[in-house]
Image (cartoon, rainbow, N blue to C red):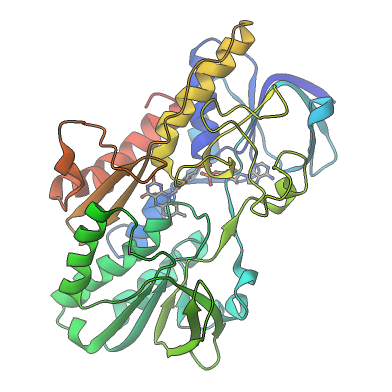
Length: 398
Ligand SMILES: Cc1cc2nc3c(=O)[nH]c(=O)nc-3n(C[C@H](O)[C@H](O)[C@H](O)COP(=O)(O)OP(=O)(O)OC[C@H]3O[C@@H](n4cnc5c(N)ncnc54)[C@H](O)[C@@H]3O)c2cc1C
């Protein structure tokens, strides 16, 4: 049994940013529990699948990105006992804490789509949501010359749901430049009634969809995959008859939820099948355990989940935990801000910043049209943001 003042579960985007912030503010006993050897910057997966970055650019050794002065326990958490302020590791080791910050991200639920797990082993199916499959997605999209390419976005909570569409636009731009776009039927399956859900952003994306000749199937989900016969069964999310699509390339983004081990703890609300940690969506403090906090993809907040949302959430959690350590009330509030940069070509991005009511919420308030298709947003998303991520965000400085 060991004790730490602050224990953070998950050394991804959220965990390292908040650890770095707390350490910089003088908290001297912060440990991060993270089993992985490699840290992954997931937004670059989309660029790599779309052929405008190398997959290797999205990973760095975890040891090289740990904020200085923060401890690292390289193990997985298997269970929690919040009544006893204890974390139980996969090895059986127990760690106690003064304050616990829970941010282990989301898991990809491949098995929720019948046939999908088996189909991933066939030559035509890939996903840019799984690092190991990103090079395959990139190769398939690059080499396609004719036939049908199907892209899917799942219903329910997802990591930056709009990122499901990014490799599709990048591939269409590439196919157009190489003169084969007119020989490829491109089908995009999205669960919502419109392509994005905010009228201003829908208009931008619909223009690109028309330009590339993409067949948009809104209100639709992937129901099953038959990898052997290269067939995807799709149908309305609301229920109704299925349709079978023959594909030459299928890029799937699977349904997602909180990690299974987290679902079986007492941290989610009763009846939350997603298993997300039940926090106050503004203070990010657990509603039943005062010494537990959650942020990022694993927290039951109302916003659309994204790394951009963490820019605000990490500040709120750090400020509130610091206040509690000093015996004060936590007063910082998360405002629901999130972001989804859609790479609509190999040189432009539609940069959607919005709140948990799906209203536009630009960082620069007087520049409302920042969300239009722009080269400047591409420069930021593809070239500036990765540098900021490795050098500032993970250190809790941005
Ligand atoms: C393909 C793709 C594209 C994306 N594009 C964008 C984008 O353009 N813009 C944007 O803002 N966001 C984007 N996102 C979303 C963004 O990456 C996530 O919202 C962000 O990483 C969430 O941070 P997190 O720390 O909550 O989770 P993660 O960064 O996923 O980190 C979770 C960490 O917890 C660890 N963990 C898991 N289980 C355990 C355990 N049992 N014990 C200990 N540790 C554990 C994991 O190993 C992992 O390191 C994208 C995501 C994907 C997959």
